[in-house]
Amino acid sequence: MKYPSFKDLILFENDDFIVVNKPPFVASLDERGGSGEVNILRLAKQYAGDAQVCHRLDKETSGAIIIAKNPEAYRHASMQFERRKVSKTYHALVDGQFVFNDLLVDLPILNDGNKNVTIDRQEGKRAETYFNSIKYYKHYTLVECKPITGRMHQIRIHLATQRASISGDIMYRGKPVFLSSLKKGYRLAKDEEEQPVMKRFALHARHLVFKGLDEQDIVIEAPYPKDFATLLKLLDKFDS
View 1: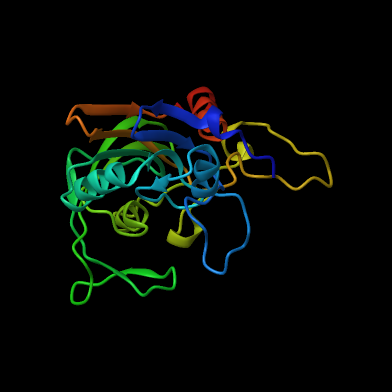
View 2 (view 1 turned 90 degrees about the horizontal axis):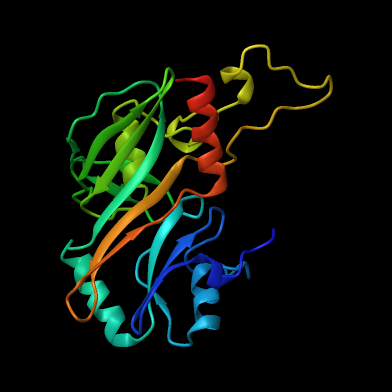
């Protein structure tokens, strides 16, 4: 896989922080067992020696991620995450039409440490996400997701509890989007196997607001990566 240059990913930089637009299929940190694959932390450390990633996104999730360039900045960001002062907004495409108007899902999440996440009202940790529908298609909805807490798979599992699985999120019963299901009369060559429009689940960290060391707001918007933008363009054309 060809990795982009770290500089090309930068959305914002000052003396203390870098915010990058993480591409899909690049891990935030070194994965367990040290696969040796390129990840955001390694790329950041090559760029700034003391760099630390302040939070993580799932490997398939694209979008804005904060990197501290020094220990003081890392502590400053960590405290904001701990106190839930960082405003995070994701965009997700879900299967089906759903009208979410400031819907709060507050179902506790249990993470067994094995990438296995369930809703558990007894043992789970508090988890809260607000959802708003922002665009309707015939068979899909673009949803704005604002997690208040930061549990693993939180947005994905909370949407699944509403029967609004993220497109392509097979773990939570989401279905891949195929062009043949959108475009009437679309035909493949005889022996060709159709690939989904997007080869991952449709989730993108779109906006971030946090405070710099000077206590001024840093406001970030991360453009959609090519696969997400292409999917929405096809839905505009064939499913609106």
